[in-house]
Image (cartoon, rainbow, N blue to C red; front, side, top):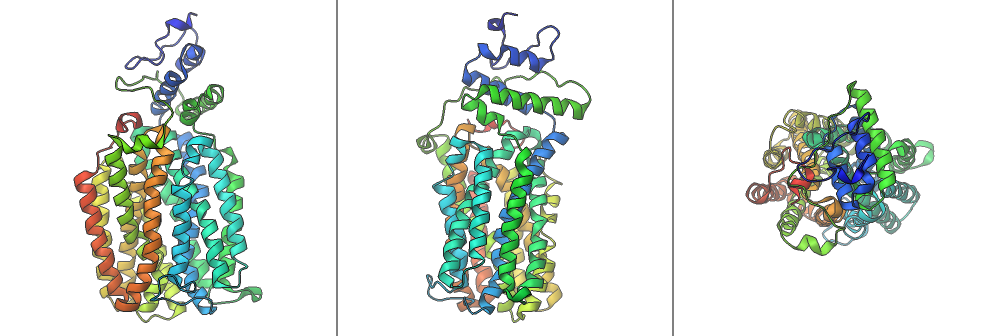
Length: 495
């Protein structure tokens, strides 16, 4: 066979099969005739024509297993806060923003660490690979959280919370770059919904653990410490389960690791064919596809990426006010409404049960409704229901509106993770997602302090007003400036 005659990665051309070979085996045989950049386009085309089969869902499941403990940790912030106060180590609120013993500063350390992980280390996922950084960040978080669980001063707890959260920030960047690179364009919304559904299953668990353990001292150890220890051990278990996750073939091809990329691609294609029960159709490189060079951060500061970088940075700054302004403070907001610590944790557990259902509701419109308009609708729900939550005094009404805020928050969460990752090219995706995510984490860190302040001067209504204004601004940013991405290939969106 004359490999130099193969159309391979010519934009708009199908990748033909050699006699006696299925299409993708012929592509592998022709691969040496292609440059690394052309081969990267070929791999992207082969991935994009794959079905959203059991194999693709299995990859999403493996990624979600690690993400479970990233979310466990974030929500743990809310459920151990009453225990930190009960132990005498922390105060519920502080008028002094940087008081080490304020719950607000504990929340600040969580998101300050995530800011460092996303802004200063997010680029590592582009250099070292998605899978490797996924593993390192999980182990890092697990060990730091275990050390935090045995600290006996507010300063020590804050320090190791900060260190653990650096790993969490890096983990989230890697997840958001990993999923869109492994699933086809027409299934990215469903893939992120599945990932978020699996991830949010852990929230009722951590809420239940908080309710059962935080008010008590099992074996003489404060309950909040047990919640942290469980997080650490669970993260290590997730690391072991996730060993079967392959590296991103897109990333490997982009970095010239052709042999490894081809081996993984053949395995994925063979699994997909087994799922389908028939051979895959030929892959076709889109006519609009372009060869990508290795990326540099400065490219993000030039058109067309600059506008998207600014828009998504503003979005992240505002969105976290609604999400973490509620989810990281639920029991404390209930205590501020006059509910005792045990009842507040019980109500918070009931509200937390709603968490997995937000992504399931999102599945009704995933890959059908334009993502930017899903974000707008979710923002309206968060702001409106939070104001109504603050106005309630009856327990049933408090729980109902708490559930509605939670559902809206989780709809926003699943769609924006997909939306922002789609907008940047493979060579820059880790850097870009890390950068825009970083501003969200910086905002969340400051919000942790501001919520403590507004809670002390305006109670729960003051917090609700703050969140409502932020949601209005977020809606305007996305409605006016957000690009359309529905069912478009990654390489086309990022042009």
